[in-house]
Amino acid sequence: MEAIADALVYAVSYINCRSLEDHESQYDDGDVGALESIAGCLVNATPAEQDALAAAAERALAAEKASPRPRPEFVEDYSRWMHDLFGDEWEGKRRVATPEV
Image (tube, helix red, strand yellow):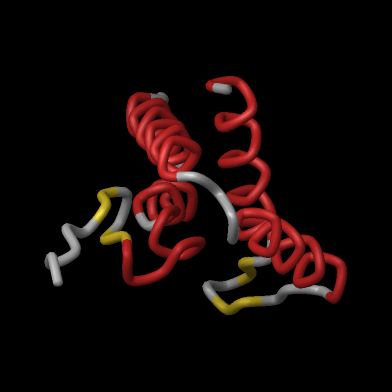
């Protein structure tokens, strides 16, 4: 599952970062469709699958920061990857504790 999570994190970040031009979002219809489809598939991700994605985003962020020339747009995207895909349940790449009812 680790390799699949790594690939998915990179693919989503690549689409996100590819759309940036002069720090303004420039998504084309194909990018939007791809991201919406990926998000739709991930709606039913199990907690274990979400944890695998969070770990992959963490690895990607660490690797990007350790590279000789880290790309700021990738550092930013990897930093907020889980929150962008799963919303308020996540803060950055960390699951937010939900209060017990």
